[in-house]
Image 1 (cartoon, helix red, strand yellow):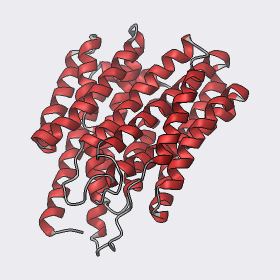
Image 2 (cartoon, rainbow, N blue to C red):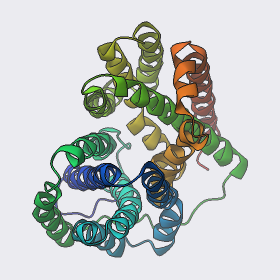
Image 3 (tube, rainbow, N blue to C red):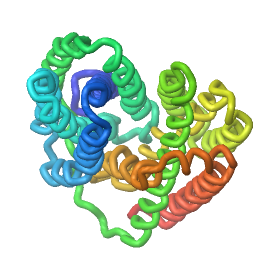
Image 4 (cartoon, helix red, strand yellow):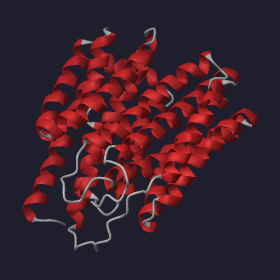
Length: 361
Protein backbone atom coordinates (compact mmCIF):
# COMPACT_ATOMS: atom_id res chain seq x y z
CA UNK A 1 0.00 0.00 0.00
CA UNK A 2 1.37 3.39 -0.95
CA UNK A 3 2.35 5.75 1.82
CA UNK A 4 2.04 9.34 0.70
CA UNK A 5 2.32 11.14 4.03
CA UNK A 6 5.16 13.32 5.21
CA UNK A 7 5.76 11.39 8.40
CA UNK A 8 6.71 7.86 9.34
CA UNK A 9 4.31 4.97 9.06
CA UNK A 10 3.87 5.03 12.85
CA UNK A 11 3.05 8.75 13.11
CA UNK A 12 -0.36 8.47 11.43
CA UNK A 13 -1.55 5.54 13.61
CA UNK A 14 -0.25 7.38 16.69
CA UNK A 15 -2.15 10.55 15.76
CA UNK A 16 -5.36 8.65 15.05
CA UNK A 17 -4.85 6.54 18.16
CA UNK A 18 -4.90 9.75 20.22
CA UNK A 19 -8.04 10.89 18.41
CA UNK A 20 -9.60 7.47 19.01
CA UNK A 21 -8.75 7.52 22.71
CA UNK A 22 -10.01 11.07 23.21
CA UNK A 23 -13.21 10.29 21.31
CA UNK A 24 -13.96 7.26 23.47
CA UNK A 25 -13.01 9.19 26.61
CA UNK A 26 -15.54 11.88 25.67
CA UNK A 27 -18.24 9.30 24.92
CA UNK A 28 -17.64 7.45 28.19
CA UNK A 29 -17.68 10.71 30.12
CA UNK A 30 -20.93 11.90 28.53
CA UNK A 31 -22.78 8.63 29.04
CA UNK A 32 -21.58 8.30 32.64
CA UNK A 33 -22.37 11.93 33.50
CA UNK A 34 -25.81 11.62 31.89
CA UNK A 35 -26.61 8.38 33.74
CA UNK A 36 -26.04 10.03 37.12
CA UNK A 37 -28.54 12.78 36.40
CA UNK A 38 -31.33 10.92 34.62
CA UNK A 39 -33.44 7.88 35.32
CA UNK A 40 -32.20 4.45 34.18
CA UNK A 41 -34.70 4.09 31.33
CA UNK A 42 -33.63 7.42 29.79
CA UNK A 43 -29.96 6.55 30.19
CA UNK A 44 -30.37 3.09 28.70
CA UNK A 45 -32.30 4.46 25.72
CA UNK A 46 -29.59 7.01 25.00
CA UNK A 47 -26.92 4.32 25.35
CA UNK A 48 -28.74 2.22 22.74
CA UNK A 49 -29.02 5.21 20.39
CA UNK A 50 -25.32 5.96 20.81
CA UNK A 51 -24.40 2.31 20.20
CA UNK A 52 -26.49 2.10 17.03
CA UNK A 53 -24.94 5.29 15.65
CA UNK A 54 -21.37 4.83 16.91
CA UNK A 55 -20.98 1.14 16.07
CA UNK A 56 -23.79 0.30 13.66
CA UNK A 57 -23.09 3.50 11.73
CA UNK A 58 -19.57 2.37 10.91
CA UNK A 59 -20.62 0.07 8.07
CA UNK A 60 -22.44 2.73 6.01
CA UNK A 61 -19.57 5.14 6.73
CA UNK A 62 -17.08 2.51 5.60
CA UNK A 63 -18.97 1.86 2.37
CA UNK A 64 -19.17 5.61 1.73
CA UNK A 65 -15.47 6.23 2.33
CA UNK A 66 -14.37 3.32 0.15
CA UNK A 67 -16.66 4.50 -2.62
CA UNK A 68 -15.38 8.09 -2.43
CA UNK A 69 -11.73 6.96 -2.16
CA UNK A 70 -10.80 10.23 -0.47
CA UNK A 71 -10.05 10.29 3.25
CA UNK A 72 -9.65 14.03 3.75
CA UNK A 73 -13.31 15.18 4.01
CA UNK A 74 -14.13 12.30 6.34
CA UNK A 75 -11.07 12.95 8.50
CA UNK A 76 -12.06 16.61 8.85
CA UNK A 77 -15.69 15.72 9.54
CA UNK A 78 -14.84 13.18 12.24
CA UNK A 79 -12.65 15.66 14.14
CA UNK A 80 -15.22 18.45 13.66
CA UNK A 81 -18.04 16.28 15.03
CA UNK A 82 -15.96 15.49 18.11
CA UNK A 83 -15.05 19.15 18.52
CA UNK A 84 -18.72 20.15 18.35
CA UNK A 85 -19.97 17.34 20.62
CA UNK A 86 -18.24 18.63 23.78
CA UNK A 87 -19.80 22.12 24.06
CA UNK A 88 -23.07 20.80 22.63
CA UNK A 89 -23.25 18.24 25.44
CA UNK A 90 -23.32 20.97 28.10
CA UNK A 91 -26.00 22.86 26.17
CA UNK A 92 -28.17 19.85 25.27
CA UNK A 93 -26.84 16.53 26.63
CA UNK A 94 -28.85 14.26 24.32
CA UNK A 95 -27.72 16.16 21.21
CA UNK A 96 -24.10 16.09 22.38
CA UNK A 97 -24.14 12.32 22.90
CA UNK A 98 -25.73 11.75 19.49
CA UNK A 99 -23.11 14.02 17.89
CA UNK A 100 -20.45 12.00 19.71
CA UNK A 101 -21.91 8.84 18.15
CA UNK A 102 -21.45 10.26 14.65
CA UNK A 103 -17.89 11.27 15.53
CA UNK A 104 -17.19 7.77 16.83
CA UNK A 105 -18.44 6.08 13.66
CA UNK A 106 -16.30 8.29 11.43
CA UNK A 107 -13.18 8.19 13.61
CA UNK A 108 -13.10 4.39 13.80
CA UNK A 109 -13.43 3.76 10.07
CA UNK A 110 -11.30 6.72 8.96
CA UNK A 111 -8.54 5.97 11.45
CA UNK A 112 -8.55 2.28 10.55
CA UNK A 113 -8.33 3.09 6.84
CA UNK A 114 -5.44 5.50 7.49
CA UNK A 115 -3.57 2.77 9.38
CA UNK A 116 -4.04 0.30 6.54
CA UNK A 117 -3.11 2.72 3.77
CA UNK A 118 -0.17 4.37 5.55
CA UNK A 119 1.82 1.14 5.40
CA UNK A 120 4.12 0.89 2.34
CA UNK A 121 2.68 -1.36 -0.35
CA UNK A 122 6.00 -3.07 -0.96
CA UNK A 123 6.13 -4.31 2.64
CA UNK A 124 3.93 -6.88 4.31
CA UNK A 125 1.20 -5.25 6.37
CA UNK A 126 2.05 -5.10 10.08
CA UNK A 127 -0.21 -5.31 13.12
CA UNK A 128 1.78 -2.88 15.30
CA UNK A 129 0.30 0.28 13.70
CA UNK A 130 -3.17 -1.21 14.13
CA UNK A 131 -2.41 -1.89 17.80
CA UNK A 132 -1.30 1.71 18.29
CA UNK A 133 -4.58 2.91 16.79
CA UNK A 134 -6.98 0.54 18.58
CA UNK A 135 -5.43 0.38 22.07
CA UNK A 136 -6.33 3.89 23.35
CA UNK A 137 -10.05 3.38 22.69
CA UNK A 138 -10.94 1.01 25.51
CA UNK A 139 -8.69 2.88 27.95
CA UNK A 140 -10.27 6.20 27.00
CA UNK A 141 -13.77 4.79 27.42
CA UNK A 142 -12.91 3.40 30.84
CA UNK A 143 -11.30 6.59 32.13
CA UNK A 144 -14.08 8.71 30.65
CA UNK A 145 -16.73 6.67 32.42
CA UNK A 146 -14.89 7.03 35.71
CA UNK A 147 -14.21 10.77 35.50
CA UNK A 148 -17.76 11.49 34.30
CA UNK A 149 -18.93 10.37 37.72
CA UNK A 150 -16.25 12.17 39.74
CA UNK A 151 -15.26 15.35 37.89
CA UNK A 152 -18.19 16.86 35.95
CA UNK A 153 -16.25 19.79 34.49
CA UNK A 154 -13.24 17.83 33.28
CA UNK A 155 -14.56 17.37 29.74
CA UNK A 156 -14.02 21.08 29.04
CA UNK A 157 -10.28 20.49 29.45
CA UNK A 158 -10.39 18.04 26.53
CA UNK A 159 -11.62 20.75 24.17
CA UNK A 160 -8.22 22.40 23.45
CA UNK A 161 -6.66 18.95 22.94
CA UNK A 162 -9.34 18.06 20.39
CA UNK A 163 -8.74 21.40 18.67
CA UNK A 164 -5.00 20.68 18.50
CA UNK A 165 -5.64 17.22 17.02
CA UNK A 166 -8.02 18.78 14.49
CA UNK A 167 -5.24 21.15 13.38
CA UNK A 168 -2.75 18.28 13.11
CA UNK A 169 -5.19 16.23 11.01
CA UNK A 170 -5.80 19.23 8.75
CA UNK A 171 -2.06 19.68 8.16
CA UNK A 172 -1.28 16.00 7.58
CA UNK A 173 -1.08 14.63 4.07
CA UNK A 174 -3.35 11.59 4.28
CA UNK A 175 -2.51 8.36 2.44
CA UNK A 176 -4.18 7.63 -0.87
CA UNK A 177 -6.34 4.67 -1.78
CA UNK A 178 -5.00 1.86 -3.91
CA UNK A 179 -6.06 2.64 -7.45
CA UNK A 180 -5.34 -0.70 -9.11
CA UNK A 181 -8.48 -2.40 -10.44
CA UNK A 182 -9.92 -5.21 -8.40
CA UNK A 183 -9.08 -8.62 -9.82
CA UNK A 184 -11.73 -11.25 -10.37
CA UNK A 185 -12.49 -12.75 -6.98
CA UNK A 186 -13.80 -16.00 -5.68
CA UNK A 187 -16.58 -14.28 -3.79
CA UNK A 188 -17.51 -17.33 -1.82
CA UNK A 189 -13.95 -17.58 -0.48
CA UNK A 190 -14.01 -13.93 0.54
CA UNK A 191 -17.38 -14.45 2.19
CA UNK A 192 -16.12 -17.39 4.23
CA UNK A 193 -13.01 -15.51 5.30
CA UNK A 194 -14.96 -12.46 6.40
CA UNK A 195 -17.64 -14.49 8.16
CA UNK A 196 -14.99 -16.44 10.04
CA UNK A 197 -13.10 -13.34 11.06
CA UNK A 198 -16.30 -11.56 12.05
CA UNK A 199 -17.26 -14.56 14.18
CA UNK A 200 -13.88 -14.43 15.91
CA UNK A 201 -14.29 -10.73 16.64
CA UNK A 202 -17.86 -11.09 17.85
CA UNK A 203 -17.05 -13.81 20.35
CA UNK A 204 -13.94 -12.03 21.56
CA UNK A 205 -15.97 -8.86 22.15
CA UNK A 206 -18.72 -10.90 23.82
CA UNK A 207 -16.25 -12.37 26.31
CA UNK A 208 -14.88 -8.89 27.01
CA UNK A 209 -18.40 -7.59 27.68
CA UNK A 210 -19.03 -10.39 30.16
CA UNK A 211 -15.70 -9.93 31.98
CA UNK A 212 -16.29 -6.18 32.10
CA UNK A 213 -19.62 -6.80 33.85
CA UNK A 214 -17.99 -9.21 36.30
CA UNK A 215 -15.32 -6.61 37.11
CA UNK A 216 -17.96 -4.15 38.33
CA UNK A 217 -18.06 -5.93 41.67
CA UNK A 218 -14.42 -5.02 42.36
CA UNK A 219 -13.22 -1.60 43.44
CA UNK A 220 -11.52 -0.03 40.41
CA UNK A 221 -12.14 -3.32 38.61
CA UNK A 222 -13.22 -1.66 35.38
CA UNK A 223 -10.11 0.54 35.37
CA UNK A 224 -7.84 -2.50 35.79
CA UNK A 225 -9.68 -4.32 32.98
CA UNK A 226 -9.36 -1.24 30.75
CA UNK A 227 -5.62 -0.97 31.41
CA UNK A 228 -5.22 -4.68 30.71
CA UNK A 229 -7.07 -4.43 27.40
CA UNK A 230 -4.89 -1.46 26.41
CA UNK A 231 -1.65 -3.25 27.29
CA UNK A 232 -2.81 -6.48 25.65
CA UNK A 233 -3.46 -4.79 22.30
CA UNK A 234 -0.06 -3.09 22.25
CA UNK A 235 1.82 -6.22 23.30
CA UNK A 236 -0.20 -8.42 20.94
CA UNK A 237 0.55 -6.19 17.96
CA UNK A 238 4.27 -6.12 18.70
CA UNK A 239 4.62 -9.87 19.38
CA UNK A 240 2.49 -10.87 16.39
CA UNK A 241 4.89 -8.98 14.12
CA UNK A 242 7.88 -10.48 15.86
CA UNK A 243 6.96 -14.18 16.11
CA UNK A 244 4.09 -14.44 13.61
CA UNK A 245 0.39 -13.94 14.25
CA UNK A 246 -0.54 -17.64 14.04
CA UNK A 247 1.97 -18.74 16.63
CA UNK A 248 0.98 -15.87 18.91
CA UNK A 249 -2.75 -16.56 18.70
CA UNK A 250 -2.31 -20.28 19.35
CA UNK A 251 -0.50 -19.32 22.57
CA UNK A 252 -2.59 -16.37 23.73
CA UNK A 253 -6.15 -17.70 23.31
CA UNK A 254 -5.63 -20.94 25.32
CA UNK A 255 -3.91 -18.89 28.04
CA UNK A 256 -6.90 -16.55 28.11
CA UNK A 257 -9.26 -19.51 28.56
CA UNK A 258 -7.10 -20.96 31.35
CA UNK A 259 -6.94 -17.66 33.21
CA UNK A 260 -10.70 -17.12 32.92
CA UNK A 261 -11.35 -20.52 34.47
CA UNK A 262 -8.80 -20.18 37.26
CA UNK A 263 -9.48 -16.56 38.05
CA UNK A 264 -13.21 -16.17 38.38
CA UNK A 265 -12.76 -14.67 41.83
CA UNK A 266 -9.39 -13.06 41.20
CA UNK A 267 -9.45 -9.72 39.44
CA UNK A 268 -5.79 -9.83 38.41
CA UNK A 269 -6.14 -13.25 36.78
CA UNK A 270 -9.20 -11.97 34.92
CA UNK A 271 -7.28 -8.88 33.85
CA UNK A 272 -4.40 -10.97 32.55
CA UNK A 273 -6.86 -13.14 30.65
CA UNK A 274 -8.41 -10.02 29.14
CA UNK A 275 -4.94 -8.83 28.07
CA UNK A 276 -4.38 -12.10 26.20
CA UNK A 277 -7.86 -12.05 24.70
CA UNK A 278 -7.73 -8.43 23.57
CA UNK A 279 -4.25 -8.88 22.14
CA UNK A 280 -5.93 -10.51 19.13
CA UNK A 281 -7.75 -7.27 18.22
CA UNK A 282 -5.00 -5.82 15.99
CA UNK A 283 -4.43 -9.29 14.49
CA UNK A 284 -8.04 -9.81 13.41
CA UNK A 285 -8.13 -6.23 12.13
CA UNK A 286 -4.97 -7.01 10.15
CA UNK A 287 -6.50 -10.14 8.63
CA UNK A 288 -9.70 -8.32 7.75
CA UNK A 289 -7.63 -5.65 6.02
CA UNK A 290 -5.75 -8.28 4.05
CA UNK A 291 -9.03 -9.87 3.03
CA UNK A 292 -10.39 -6.52 1.79
CA UNK A 293 -7.29 -4.68 0.54
CA UNK A 294 -9.24 -2.31 -1.73
CA UNK A 295 -11.84 -1.52 0.96
CA UNK A 296 -9.88 -0.50 4.08
CA UNK A 297 -12.68 1.56 5.63
CA UNK A 298 -15.16 -1.32 5.27
CA UNK A 299 -12.61 -3.70 6.80
CA UNK A 300 -12.31 -1.35 9.78
CA UNK A 301 -16.09 -1.09 10.07
CA UNK A 302 -16.51 -4.86 10.20
CA UNK A 303 -13.73 -5.20 12.78
CA UNK A 304 -14.41 -2.24 15.07
CA UNK A 305 -18.13 -1.64 14.60
CA UNK A 306 -20.25 -4.56 13.46
CA UNK A 307 -18.52 -7.13 15.68
CA UNK A 308 -18.89 -5.01 18.84
CA UNK A 309 -22.52 -4.23 18.09
CA UNK A 310 -23.37 -7.91 17.56
CA UNK A 311 -21.38 -9.00 20.61
CA UNK A 312 -23.41 -6.76 22.90
CA UNK A 313 -26.75 -8.30 21.90
CA UNK A 314 -26.53 -11.42 24.13
CA UNK A 315 -25.44 -9.39 27.16
CA UNK A 316 -27.64 -6.31 26.88
CA UNK A 317 -30.32 -7.15 24.34
CA UNK A 318 -32.19 -9.46 26.70
CA UNK A 319 -32.01 -6.92 29.53
CA UNK A 320 -30.69 -9.58 31.88
CA UNK A 321 -26.90 -9.52 31.99
CA UNK A 322 -26.97 -11.39 35.32
CA UNK A 323 -27.94 -14.61 33.51
CA UNK A 324 -24.93 -14.35 31.21
CA UNK A 325 -22.59 -13.52 34.09
CA UNK A 326 -23.84 -16.47 36.15
CA UNK A 327 -23.26 -18.70 33.14
CA UNK A 328 -19.72 -17.41 32.97
CA UNK A 329 -19.17 -18.15 36.66
CA UNK A 330 -20.48 -21.69 36.18
CA UNK A 331 -18.16 -22.29 33.20
CA UNK A 332 -20.97 -22.64 30.65
CA UNK A 333 -20.53 -19.45 28.68
CA UNK A 334 -16.79 -19.09 29.05
CA UNK A 335 -16.01 -22.62 27.84
CA UNK A 336 -18.57 -22.54 25.03
CA UNK A 337 -17.51 -19.11 23.83
CA UNK A 338 -13.79 -19.90 23.89
CA UNK A 339 -14.33 -23.19 22.02
CA UNK A 340 -16.30 -21.40 19.32
CA UNK A 341 -13.67 -18.66 19.29
CA UNK A 342 -10.86 -21.15 18.69
CA UNK A 343 -12.83 -23.04 16.02
CA UNK A 344 -13.71 -19.83 14.22
CA UNK A 345 -10.08 -18.73 14.33
CA UNK A 346 -8.87 -22.05 12.90
CA UNK A 347 -11.47 -21.93 10.10
CA UNK A 348 -10.52 -18.36 9.25
CA UNK A 349 -6.83 -19.17 9.25
CA UNK A 350 -7.35 -22.15 6.97
CA UNK A 351 -9.42 -20.07 4.59
CA UNK A 352 -6.62 -17.51 4.51
CA UNK A 353 -4.14 -20.28 3.72
CA UNK A 354 -6.37 -21.60 0.95
CA UNK A 355 -6.59 -18.11 -0.49
CA UNK A 356 -2.80 -17.82 -0.39
CA UNK A 357 -2.25 -21.20 -2.05
CA UNK A 358 -4.80 -20.57 -4.80
CA UNK A 359 -3.30 -17.13 -5.54
CA UNK A 360 -4.67 -13.63 -5.04
CA UNK A 361 -8.39 -13.15 -5.24
